[in-house]
Image 1 (tube, rainbow, N blue to C red):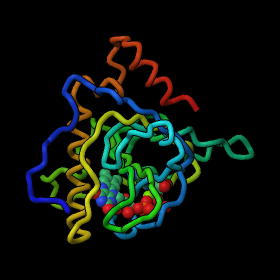
Image 2 (spheres, protein in one colour):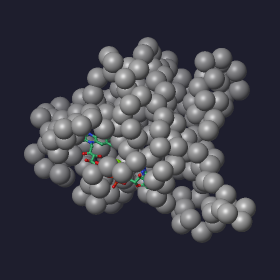
Image 3 (cartoon, rainbow, N blue to C red):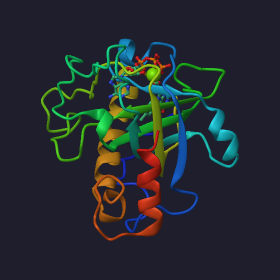
Image 4 (spheres, rainbow, N blue to C red):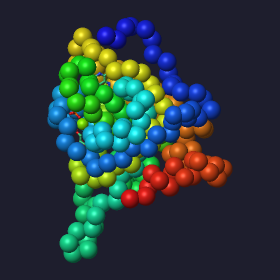
Length: 215
Ligand SMILES: Cc1cc2nc3c(=O)[nH]c(=O)nc-3n(C[C@H](O)[C@H](O)[C@H](O)COP(=O)(O)O)c2cc1C
Ligand SMILES: Nc1ncnc2c1ncn2[C@@H]1O[C@H](COP(=O)(O)OP(=O)(O)O)[C@@H](O)[C@H]1O
Ligand SMILES: [Mg+2]
C-alpha cells in the first residue's frame, strides 16, 4: 500500500537514461480489461507483454519513456483515413514521438493474474500539462482510439513500484502525479533529446529515435 510520503518530482539520473535503459518494446495495441477509460478516465494503450521475455530482470512498476505510433494506413481508394479522426490535440500523434508513462505488472488494485504493459500517451511537452496540480480540474490526455496500430515504446526510466490503494481516487491521483513526474523527467536535456532532435548527433540516441519511427 502506498504511504503518504511526498513524491520526488523527477525520476532517474539528470544526465539521462542509465542501464538497463533505454529499453525497446513494441507491439500492436490490444484490448485490455476496459477499465482505463471507463473506471479511471485514464486511457492506456495495452501491448502484448511478450517482449518482456528479453528483459527477465525488469521489475514490475511504473516507468516513463517515449512512444511513436505507426502511420494510419490509407483506405481502399488510396485516401487517408486521417481526416476527421477527431484528433483535437492539434498534433498528429502518428507523426510524432510523444511522452509516455506506463505500468508493467499485475495492477494490484485490480488483482490481475496476467502481467500487462499499459501505456498512457501524454501530449507534447510543448503543450501545458492537462494533469498539472494547478489545473482546476485535471484531465488525462485522450486521442482517437488506435486499437490495432503498431506502437514503438522506448522506456527511459523507472518511477515507482505498483501499489494497491484504499480507493480509486487515490490510484487516479498517484497516476496524475506519475504523469507530472514523467513530464518533468523528460524535460531534462538528457531525456528531451529522445523527443526532439537536439542536433548533437549522439549515436545511440539517433539510433533509438530512428528505431522509434520505423514501422
Ligand atoms: C502510470 C500508471 C501507473 C499505474 N499504477 C498502478 C498501480 O500502482 N497499481 C495498480 O493497481 N494499477 C496501476 N495502474 C494500472 C491501472 O490500474 C490500469 O491502467 C487500469 O487497470 C486499466 O487497465 P486496462 O487497460 O486493462 O483497462 C497504473 C497505470 C498507469 C498508466
Ligand atoms: N492518451 C492515450 N493513451 C493511450 N491510449 C489512448 C489514449 N487516448 C486514447 N487511447 C485509446 O484508448 C485505448 C485504451 O483505453 P482503455 O480504457 O485502457 O481500454 P483497454 O482496457 O482496452 O486498454 C487505447 O487502446 C487507445 O486506442
Ligand atoms: Mg488500457
